Image (cartoon, rainbow, N blue to C red; front, side, top):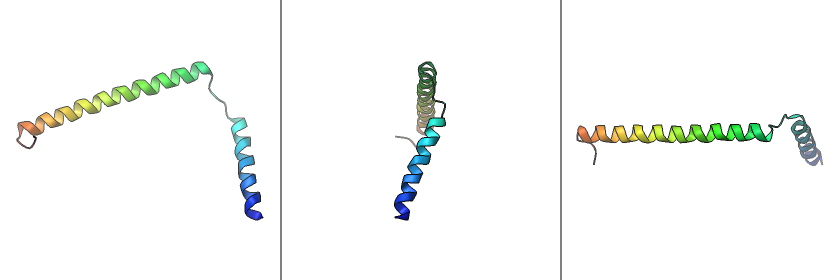
Length: 65
């Protein structure tokens, strides 16, 4: 019985915390999403270029395929 009351208390307190959260507006959410996607794309390009450079360097010294 103590476990059940603990679980109920946990979810009740969690719901109370969610009511106090300041949720972003639609405009803020869109802005944050664009920043995250742009950062991911830039990082993917940087990692791709780094991988390409290391591969070419290994080919030059005879360790690559």
